[in-house]
Length: 202
Image 1 (cartoon, helix red, strand yellow):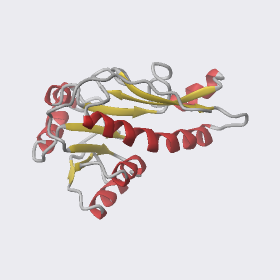
Image 2 (image 1 turned 120 degrees about the vertical axis):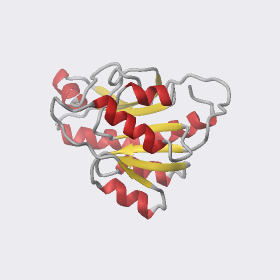
Image 3 (image 1 turned 90 degrees about the vertical axis):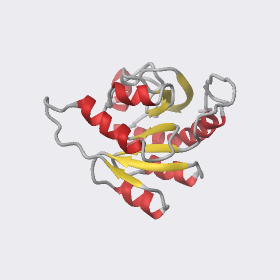
Image 4 (image 1 turned 30 degrees about the vertical axis):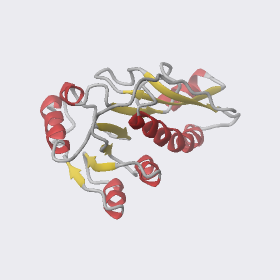
């Protein structure tokens, strides 16, 4: 199915050009960002993961800010402050979330106002949350997709920058549909980041 995109445009930004990518897993989205030649200044991870090796192989500095725990006593604000401090050691003007497994708090958005990007495997505002693909299939939708948006303290919220549709096929499982969405995401997200850094996508 043909892609559908939306965007918001404004003037050229004077923010520092460096991009921080926050990752937690296999690094497939990070790999697409690196392959696109975007100016990645640092990759930050919250746990040991393959994203570290991808960054190192590309000659990009890695900051590891590991979580001390995952229970109800997790201090999200203090952890976020540590992330911001780590990013402050690099020339960073924009942050791209790339499968980062920790929801970050207010200090990140104060440090990078309207400069934190995220990608999500649905056509927001539909199907927010961790199980977006599963929920889309359960709802019986014929079309879902992926969304690039400005991240806010509210999870999977914030202004939409770009979207692209992906058709749900008969017999799709959560895994097969998600793989097709990720293939589209690996193209759309770097494109959107580049346009954002150039100031043509806001």
